[in-house]
Length: 574
Image 1 (tube, rainbow, N blue to C red):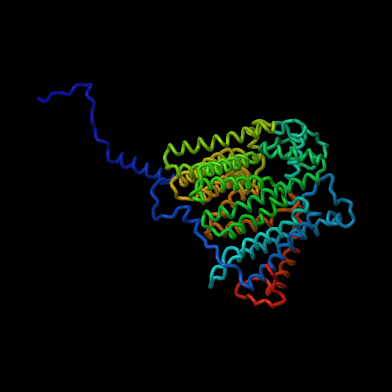
Image 2 (cartoon, helix red, strand yellow):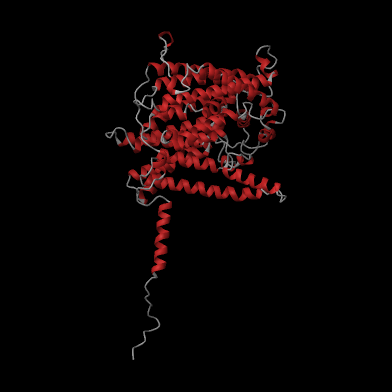
């Protein structure tokens, strides 16, 4: 008779093959979802969106002539926008410098004509940008790749920007909120605790021009921006026109940083700098909303991209013989600029995570290297954030107003659009308006999806499957599209970094189409016109632009196969 084992003896059972297989499949699925599996032949985001480009040769004589005419077409459009904005722009309620002036004030008394002029100018700038893209992204399909030079693109961009610099604000009234919030800070009050109406009074000259929805709203911007605005207020006082132009100069500093950093990042990613500048810096969304609209995204993006470029000089140095001290200096400068950009608007701080993952990969791509990189960059960023927060005298109040913008319901936000569509469906079916309840579900789910995409991109940088610039652009794109509120210029958060990395048609074609359509449909006064005025202006714009296309059918490259050699007297020096 066999002996019975003691009760205390452990039982040894072999694991179930089925349970082990499920566990292995689950483990494999998680690694694949996070991008931690070994790279294989299957396409991932880096293959779908990115391909190396060559810079190509310069333009030939015919293309130089076309470039000159395209440049003039865009400049004409920008001038028409500036003229039309005298009546159709986002003019201040008080201190309007053209009000009552015989010639300049005429546009304000002719809203249909002013809107038509602005819309025609907008259409011409967009068409010129599209035509310029043929010389920026590729050459003739049956010949060698030819692109315009960097100096030609810079001069074209400068020519298109100059008329918008002297024009009234267009497409947004946010600059008036900047002025009011800066005045609150200059008075020693807390702009994160009280809005313009409460701090300055409803009848104050600066409060009167702030849109009603933002008059009682605390500032949603970082302390660096408000501190700069406070200094602007000390210079301009309550002079709205002077404040507008100084804030526009600040936006131009941001645009200059974008133009400086974007081609350098493009070279790091194997992309032609001119094509990156055309899609990123010459984009109508940038011209219309960062320059004409004076949004602080210009400074945020400029500082962020410049910081990424400087930091990557330390991670992937151009000079292998560079000293450790010099590399540490580049890394510290890049970290400081990215942290400073987050003190304009917080989302740009995400760039520091991708720089950190690139640094961790350089140090061995281990868990320890990730912790070390996070500690180094986190400490540097914390020092800058603390210095700005307390040096400005505003403290950490900015952390309490990050959700201010969610008061607006934007159709461009995917979770908000789903919530609004579901709520409208409920109303049509007689079930009541449940938009708010649905938004409380769709927005958290969208936030989780955006967080997952961001984590996946961070791990992809760590494993070397994607360039940090491309990963940053993809993550910002997910965050923007899944954010509760999306304004048209928010898309530049993703478009500009991706312009330096993503070259495939699957990215460029939708980006070009969306930039063109959104740039055209938004009203230049930052609000709405009466429907009949919009209809009149739209019909007139279609007719005039159509006539311009017909009149220039042999002088502009509307169709590549009909290029006509220019006469010697028409050849212009680009």
